[in-house]
Length: 249
Image 1: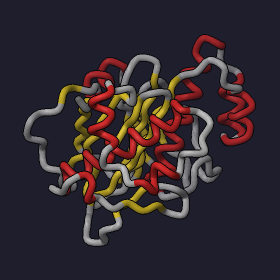
Image 2: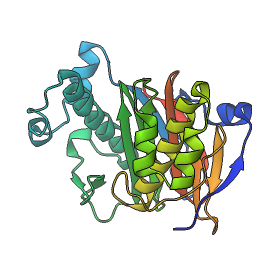
Image 3: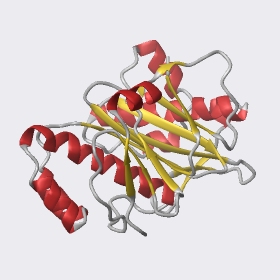
């Protein structure tokens, strides 16, 4: 895959364009010109949690029984419930009627072959992002900016050599944010392309803060939704679309 070309946008412009707002009663049509991104907290109150998770089938609950972290189990099940509620809204079906499968690389997909809806899911440290488009691949990633991550070691393993060297030379006060921006952009692109996580096939230059990226052929676009303080998000799409960002309530 060719290196991604960077086209910097001002921080103010990007935050204004891709900030999350409450969803309207009537959503704009999810057509080929629009992408919808939702952010949600994975720590709802007890009643909300019961409502959200009621549509998650026993098989998916059973899949995480062995996880040691109760918090991780709750976040996973809550994410799956929210996904079904959102898909139900787009498909006009009850959340519990939504049948999901997984690709060989673990990405959830709709079982229904006649559906043209494409979607992507990511969650980190109590925050989830969901992206939806019609007939265009999308990928989304969100990460909480932890301070205890071995940034240089991860960059040497997964990033292109020039990218890792650039990151290593950055001052400490900007390295963490730059790393998570690069990581989320990378993962969102891989999801949109249908490649496995942490694949080494994407090679590019580190972006400036809050950047829009396009591939050399203009096919891949990466934009930055801003889900919450302390989190970094990235949305990758095939072809430029109108992006709406909403908060789940």
